[in-house]
Amino acid sequence: MQRDVIIALDFKDGQTALNFLDKFTEEKPFVKIGMELFYAEGPSIVKAIKERGHKIFLDLKLHDIPNTVKGGMRSLSKLGVDIVNVHAAGTIEMMKAALEGVVREDGSRPLVIAVTQLTSTSEERMQKELLINASINDTIVHYAKNTKEAGLDGVVCSPLEAGMVKDAVGKDFLTVTPGVRFADGDKGDQVRVTTPARAKEIGTDFIVVGRPITQAEDPVAAYRRCVKEFCE
Ligand code: C5P
Figure 1 (spheres, protein in one colour):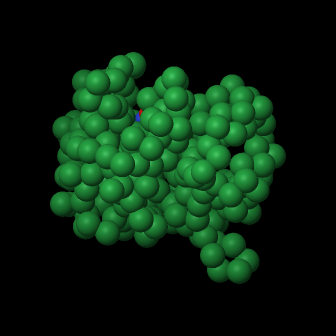
Figure 2 (cartoon, rainbow, N blue to C red):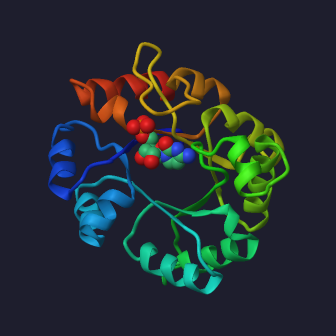
Figure 3 (tube, rainbow, N blue to C red):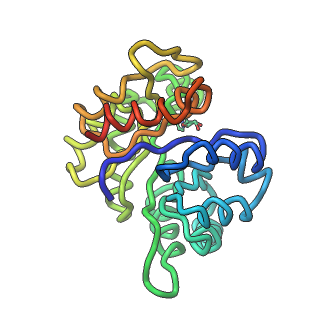
């Protein structure tokens, strides 16, 4: 898959999400369905959005014993989504089980990526609460290497970390990066942010953009601006 902009559909219910997508009459953006929307609507919202022709990143961040993750992934993969994810903290064995679970009967499968450290986790909290005595960057690179060893396709990380991950694990290893803001935009609660243009320079594969598009006065224009800065 080539470089693309993924819109985070962080909406409270399916109707609001579908009304939002109705605004896009000329293009079919790649979208991310997260916990809020999936837990509210279940698989039917995935099917409805897929039927409209959108690619889907189903962002449910699985983290459980390997056998349970394998079964969970089997169910999610049947929905025909394009990207699914797990927490790398679940271990290499769990990630391998996830990969076994996603393979469909016809041999196809979605891309499987892993969250390294959430961008909301500070180095201080990671060290104090999780008792991880390494730096956050070393931890991210280490988890990315584990992800690669398990055979997964890439990681979710901050765009500011994507270069470091690519240098350590290889340029073909995918990086999917939230935390993107326009240079003249509001950061909201995100801390480590960068622009679509800078994310392109760093070399990330997919940017995940929520509020700068969903809350824009003209979401289609905001989406097009992202695509122009990041993809062209
Ligand atoms: O609105 P905004 O552009 O900040 O949305 C970013 C999206 O990416 C949200 O759906 C958020 O849950 C997700 N995300 C993130 N940081 C991570 C992992 C996921 O912001 N580390």
